[in-house]
Length: 229
Image 1: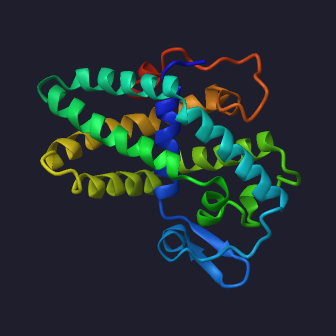
Image 2 (image 1 turned 120 degrees about the vertical axis):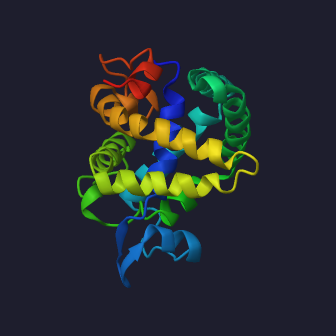
């Protein structure tokens, strides 16, 4: 298991659910994830459905993994290592990452799997989950990762992700410009190499959503995500 994989998984989760993507509501026509988030529109689907159960199980596994102190320590180690590449911005980068990571960790503890799956339309009967006919967490995980890879291949989605993060930088008092510079410098590389990482590694096994396979996660994720390969 890659020692630095948790940061990438957390980053992907936050980025993918933040990108406006169309989801079809069963009764009310097209609804966007950003609208669901702001209005908390109820999803007209029983929470006991196979898709919902699989989503809730998967989210529970992921949150449990990300809430572990050992995982969070590795995340901080990766963040500090990444900042060391910023040279003149190293100290500002460390301060920013420390503050942002604290916020992320606190937000993770607030996530309720059932509400999360409903809020982001992951219980909806859409093409993405057409293969999920049981509450099999492993099947759900692979369907979800297929969708993430699809987004990573989409230039428009990449542009939207960067825009979202640039806007978030405006909320970091005293570090706005440094934050924007870090986003522009590292996020494109992370997204490009993230696609390769997902295609080459058994992320669902890493999250304990699937049994471990013979494939192993790259032990040096930092090189995969931040290299210019």
